[in-house]
Image (cartoon, rainbow, N blue to C red; front, side, top):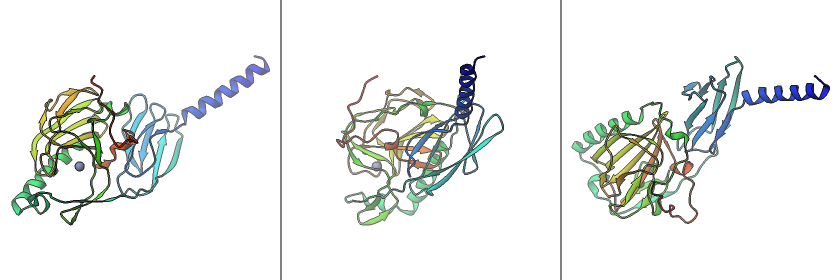
Length: 280
Ligand SMILES: [Zn+2]
């Protein structure tokens, strides 16, 4: 081997070492975001000491809550026995206060009997979102599930009829009752509940690895639990069921019990309207 060959060989070896130890992250390091990652296949990844699930190809996902601690620690143990610790510093967000009047008073101050129902339904939703499947729909690009004006954003502090309540965790898209709702990514239907107390007609789709979409206030479903759905497929119809003041779609994304901002997977349109739906 000539001198040039030796140098080239050395350079390629260095390149191989650095690419093997790379931690690639896709997504903004900000409160509320969904972040996808890539490491060498066969590695182990830990977020603040919690082990994450990896695909055969070394892909993984994680998410940060609305008020998440700003410093997070990602540790990767590579197949060759070496390890790398990367500190993730999240950007802090500020959230709006949103005042909503004209909400039915039974949903602002529920009766004793309703509280039992609310608790039971919340537990059912929590259990559905805790599913840790090996589906990989979360790896693809997400599309907007409905067409219309964005009328509510993630994180806003909500005041109903003058009474402060918990923050809003979805994206609201104003659309006529009966308008189609499309799957934003591939997945499997894990819940289709026609009438929950707060969220009315509620559909949950599992995109894999703890990532799920929830759709609220629906007027009807086009799919049933257990059914596999493709991105862009019609899954439901917009409605105004539950605690709602008019027809709209409320779309939420979770990473297990961590509530994320759907805008971190579907970029915010500058027009304030979601793009026209693409029928697939
Ligand atoms: Zn909403």
